[in-house]
Amino acid sequence: MNRTKPLLSSTTRAALERAFQQRYGETAALIQSATAPGRVNLIGEHTDYNEGWALPMAIDRSVTVTFAPRQDRLIRVASDRFDEDTCLDLDAFNDSQPRDAQWWHYIAAVAQQLELKGHKLRGIDALLGGDLPMASGLSSSAALELATARALCAASGVPWLAQDMAALCTRAENDCIGVECGVMDQIASALGEPGHALLLDCRSLTTEPVAMPSQASVVVLDTGVRRALAQSAFNQRRKSCEGAVAVLREHDPSIRALRDAAPEQLDAVRRQLSEETFRCARHVIEECQRPSSMADAFAANDLDRAGALMNDSHTSLRDLYQVSCPELDHITDSARRHSACFGARLTGAGFGGCAVALVATVQVDDFIAQVEESYRVNHTAPFNAFVTRASAGARLLE
Ligand code: GLA
Image 1 (cartoon, protein in one colour):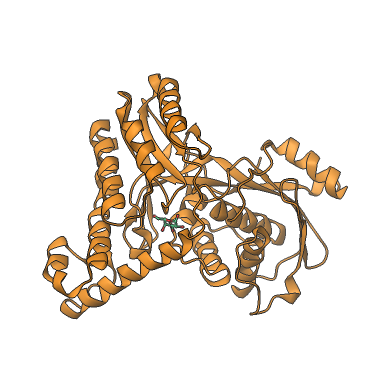
Image 2 (cartoon, rainbow, N blue to C red):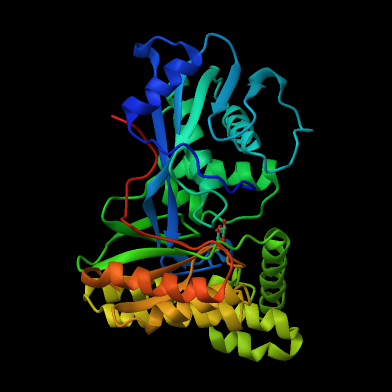
């Protein structure tokens, strides 16, 4: 999403519902709040659209949609943090919907996909809130989509099937917004589990909960860098991957995606690939192995091994996939220089945004202070860091 401001900071149900009542004057009994978290991906980057594996974790920051059903088919949405309120008519959707990334387009896109699935939705009045920073690579778009879906389903009595809704929201983003993302962000936001990351198979969309280590903290390090051309660079990497698959398939038709290829198979076709296509494919094929290795390392409580995998992943994203930037390289280097850091890597698409570090909990404050000092001396982009915990996926607030 193209806004940098945070959403409403209050996340308690009572505060959200008070704000809603002030806005719409609605009877309290009809008001509910749906919430969906952002995510950090611990490892397995740019693997989702190659049908590989990833290890994302839903975080304890979220988007909320406080809502009450309407009698008609209008969706009215307000937000204290955006300048514009919006009103969408469920009976006026058509194929010439804007393919854009304004915040209300995500809401329209999800509603449209639910209707295409055959659900006849009721309108809602809604107020957007939450504490998830936007446009920083923590999947605020997926969180907005899933919170919207949760609210619309609740208002219209549509049963909540989390995995299906993640796939529907991904389609909304691909088909209606025109962003060629994979399914990882939406799955994490829909299916997150407290205390656990999710080992996600992006072909079958099945997930396995992976218990997070008790003595380490997950720290999000935001470089403050936002890249305007990140989307086109992302699409270009996707094309490179598809190009590699087309060549690999000529030799082995069973290869449907880079997930299916072994490193030796890629080496065998190297001369038929451009240097860029080869590098991208090599990153993906090697990165596909890392999520399950990291899950094994967590199970064995081998945090040095988990950290080493994160560092390898970052190196590969920097040198092979080439989606890092000087600020991400600096922040991960300085993170690793702290003795409490097991490993650090960029998280999400790259080109700016956030890094994630695994840090011994007892020294986490000192770690953040040291990384911040080093960053501020070297860069002008605004630094932000916070410790986060694995949290539950999209739900109605109790
Ligand atoms: C973005 C996309 C995801 C995934 C990551 C890279 O976050 O939305 O689907 O491709 O980049 O791993």
